[in-house]
Amino acid sequence: MKLLIYFLFYIIVLPPCFAQIENINFSISPPIIDLKVHSNSSRTIFITMNNSGTEPLEISTKLAELGMTIKGQAFPQEPIHNQWSCTDWIILPFQKYSLKPNENKKAKIVIRIPGGADGGKYGIILFEAFNKQKNDLNGLNLVGRLGTLVLLELRGPKKIEGIIGDFYSEKVDAHISFKVIIKNSGNIHFKGKGSIVIFNAKNRIIDRVNIEGGTGTILPERERLFSAVWANSPKMIKGKYKAEVRFYIPGGKSVLKKINQFTI
View 1 (cartoon, rainbow, N blue to C red):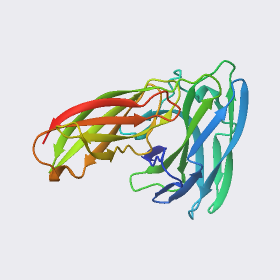
View 2: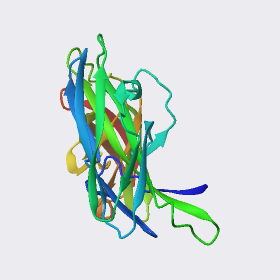
View 3: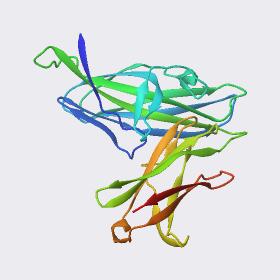
View 4: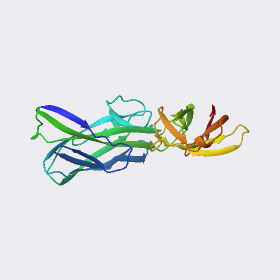
């Protein structure tokens, strides 16, 4: 049987997690599992699957690694079992489910954390839904794919650190736009936020803008792009200016700072 997979993947976004294509109306909850756990322990959780359509669905589950672009867009990867992965810890007692129209079922998930583990660990539980009785005109079976992101924070020593990579400005239309790349150099994910303070040629503060980056979540050893537009820049006189980015990491030891010189 040929399968045409539609990647309807909503990770690190607000619920509900819902797929609607052709004859598939399928959702899962929760889309994110964020747990603080101890090493040498286990947790059992349940993910609700809902068929809100008028056709029966077959559901299969499997594990994947979390990939993320520099803009924070998440996507599934084949398991690579690196130091940040928890896919080896996740057990799927049942990998196949059948859902009648308007039926709910709970998928049981067991997470077994080994001794000596620390920092942050990540993975994705994928749910693929299809109606094996319905094919399209080309004989393909449409598959809706949804994922639940698993974020584990191990209790114990944590290294919450980040560094500013690149920080630059550019002119977009009539406005000055700022780009900031933040790298997580610690061993646990964090959600950072920050602002850009703008100085004139006399080193006086004349404005401040917040930087935006979606949820702001940055995984260990990953980079995230944040941006900001200086709305008042068209009103400024021509000359030299200075911008200082100030990025705050909850639980971090200090505020990250970097300066960029630019002209209007």
